[in-house]
Length: 207
Image 1 (cartoon, rainbow, N blue to C red):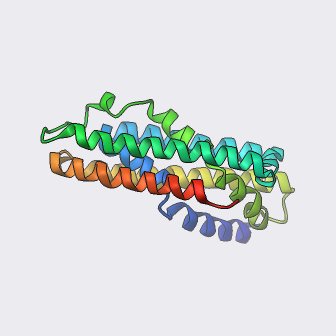
Image 2: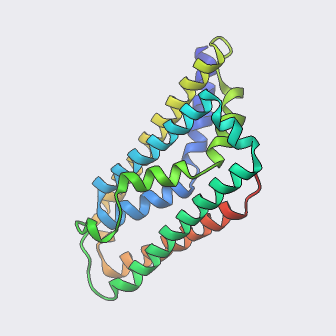
Image 3: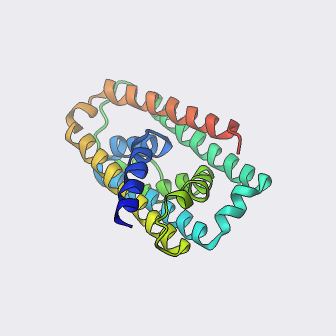
């Protein structure tokens, strides 16, 4: 069982480190409002994973993954939310103009960071497909299937929390650099374009 869990950990770690919408959302919050908001966003993302994990163990995620209509509805909602966050970042880059904006101005980023992370993750149907399609193949055979799946869900949540939390702290070390108006505007624009790109990718992806 130990060998199986270690192998699963390696696969989940690699998948966790692949840049995606979660990292773009965390970057936007951490740079725009500081490391505390960044960590709260990571907490929301992790909570979203746990919700998907509970649905997977209960069998509901499989229903979503198998239903074209339900999948499409969640997919389009998730895509719309990413497009909204991307447009918001681009709008902020225009509003900044040439004025310096300090990181403590968390209120200017907009929205509750924990809720932002949670919603962006819960509205990502790819996680349902990932959990119902891949996790069963990684679950330890020596454990009951539901228990094995639950162990991997918790493991994935912990890996995500550690990886994105560490990423937020790395960003915080470069706070002085990100406070420069030109850098902030450029990063807002890049993050906005990336989020819009992910939104369009989610919207046009096949189930």
